[in-house]
Image (cartoon, rainbow, N blue to C red; front, top):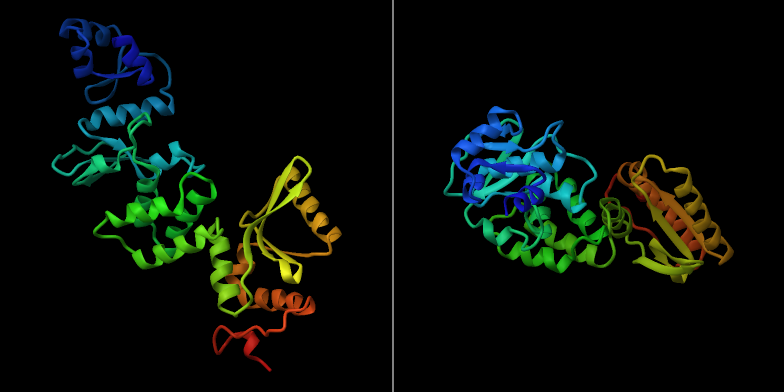
Length: 312
């Protein structure tokens, strides 16, 4: 029983857990005194030598926090594949009726009903994906950052818009509720990144361009391509990428996709983050020019009195 517990917790155990498994105080003290167990956080020990791996650090923080603690926010996002970056602090949620002594490197968030947020099966204990997403939106410094978390979670197929919307219903206080709800509808229609949301809002809608089809699939040898925005009636595809640079294999895949579109008689326009955020009006003009050349009977509208499209 004890060995299974230690294995499950990546070599980390609390003093109370050792007692509960039948070890005596003398046995625990002997392990510590001889250096076989090393203190990690308060009454929590590593039962191995060497530098503790990330999993052991997370378990130590959880055991130090005690009853009802679960990993949350950036730490849960790390474990769930929502972020590729490791946050310098370990984030935990604990019941609101508890008070935890400050631990260096650990950020504690109090919640009155934490059990509703807990994932039913994942180990170590952590919040559900939808709760993780909403927690991160509330920590975000800007609306764009908040929307980015939601779009990324759906774009990586970690959850679905309706599940996030359902989780929102149970939060009495939620910053940017209306904006998040509106974005979820667009994400459900295929906007899988913040950049795609910005294109939809600041380029397509703001300048009254025709509505494109999001994440349209087209077959290729060995699989499918998914186009970010497709205007099938006007033979135009728009690809959006927020990465500053691509690995060589990604560039070749992009070239292959563009070439296949050209063979099919379609135009491909590619835009990055700077284009869509800092030059949305110029992007709209380019897209409109191709649409009109390919048969669109409409005209782009200026998004504001200072929009370049307002010039005669």
